[in-house]
Length: 473
Ligand code: UGA
Image (cartoon, rainbow, N blue to C red; front, side, top):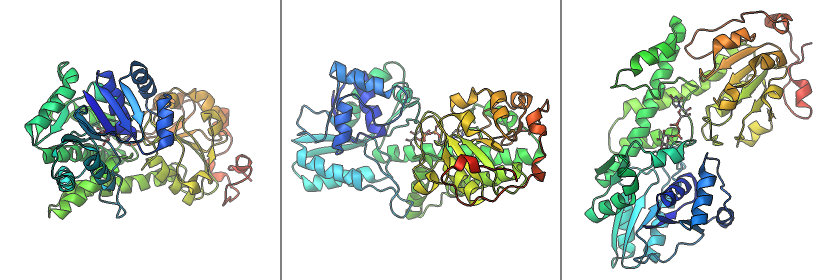
């Protein structure tokens, strides 16, 4: 089939490259000329494992093309897929749909005879109705159908999620739209991927409900982890014990520093706000949003408590900035909230991430950025694992401990082997798991008890920050 995809962001590019892989012809368009020129040369603007290779494959075999203008939408085009961003609106709650409606107006200009429009972007219920009304109002002569086909791609594993989906959701009110989308996904359904056919608005709600449910699940296990801390129980045993129940399932039961990213925080807020407009109270979703915010803030206090309460002048090395591994995305990343909290308590921060960098200039200028995790941990009082990148899990922990002033590991992902860390000289703190003390006391840990060390107050980090980091007086 011939598809025009509007928006060369994360969703548009993954969809275009994967649809090309499935044998369709995808023309991806974006207003950003530089982005399009780079893509034409096979340079992918985002970090997503496997995406560059897939884009290059599509360019080479002629199934994928890029342009900065929408072509005439003649009968040669089977469908137009909208994959533009729906970021939070100015009120911080609703989704900003201006991009969707701008594309709708352009489609109304370029369509010839009839057009099938498919929204992949995450939109509140009723958006498909409004989009169809808009196009029809601008072009009463046109036969227009709008369908909803939400994506369930996870950053970091998006290619696999697209090509081996748990399910494909097609929300269409017209039979012809539903048939076209069944043809589009035939290469996947014939391999066994289930396709759920629903009404258009139901598909829009499915996307929000799926993300909100997963956000609830994470929030639930995070709160249970707090209870496990208080009762000295290992939350991993609890997660295993409940996860074997098929009605609950084992996934998304890993405690962490709060869910982040460009989807869960934004979509839960938009869902709760939409429901309020309909006079419906989604109290569980509202509470998950509040609980997650509290949790992100609590992580700074957790690190402070592990270090005896006073963070002034203490050097903390933060491993991981992205909201999860295998992505450079730091939007709503718990690491950002953590660093802001630690800085406000007077700590000195060095940070390391294989791909991500912080967007906030005030944080970037206040921290020391290191490429090498061992350098990052040099003379540190504490290492915090904020994001569980594989490269961090495979570190030489004896070497890391030797580089530090006091080997303390706060593992905010419960991703490390704490018994092994203890054998390497670390004291460890996790989330709802028992703390470990160093098994063999190393010379480095015996130097001085932390509580007896006085630190020079350092209010601003600049210039030779490395030398200023937590020098005992
Ligand atoms: C999420 C959904 O999983 C996708 O299905 C959906 O398509 C996407 O949003 C979207 O709306 O576009 P994503 O944001 O890429 O995908 O990331 P997830 O893997 O779902 O993780 C979200 C957050 O939850 C991360 O901060 C992660 O660290 C956290 N998490 C996840 C936990 O803290 N514990 C877990 O057990 C799982």
